[in-house]
Image 1: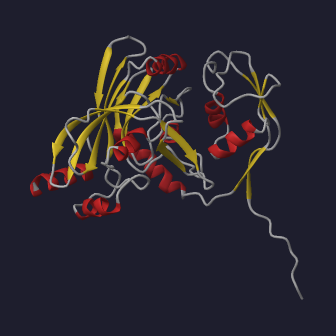
Image 2: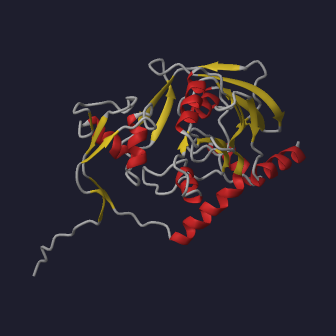
Image 3: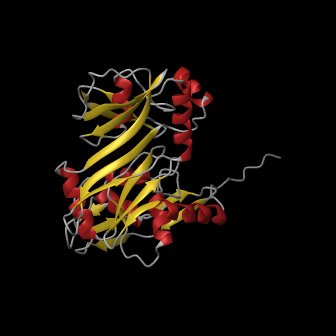
Length: 327
């Protein structure tokens, strides 16, 4: 006898009914998508963009765009949201990761926190991930009323990540980013001998999202203007350690610009070179060699200039030592 029993997939209810949020002064100024990511914990980013695009999220009873800057007294309507249950990591594993992040904090005061993010940890949950740096920091500081990312770096990139502890600090730092007064420096190990005369790359970048949800960025005249400045730190037999300073802040900018120059970054699973990657694996490299090494900002409260640096992890230091020895 044929069994016609219907199989029902397990779902998690994020919110079972329509919700309305009135934006207060402390919430004003942030983008709609960032507001929703904060309110709908565990909802994939792709789903949030989908419900905004379809008009299911309303601001003051009208459709809105993800980049809309919320104003005080705006009323945001959020529809019921259900997502498929995922096998979550054991609580003990999460707590271990959270506790480990404490030792990576480089600087902290009453308005900002700076962390040396390890490679392999996303900056926030979503898109199939239920754990990120910002969730970990909120778990470490349950008494904190406000903790928000100032900017993002890729999951596989390590290094400096700024977190605001007050809305006023977030606004100030976002203004510095818009005015391009924030200076960031990255260290990257790239294939071959970087040419000394290549000091600036200006190549427009176009972001594409595949059906799988994976983001791929390409140099394309239809893309957004993008600029990265480069200098050579150290040369090895088959590789170069370079410093990259992005003037603009596009997705995967440094990774795509180095590829465009003919020198992809070591162990870049999207834009890299498999033969070069294998050579780097042979000397002990286990991750993307891209590290947010330094940042220059004005302190959002005092206005004093600040320069913060983040040391390389032991794996990257070991790889450099091996390459030096071979040279």
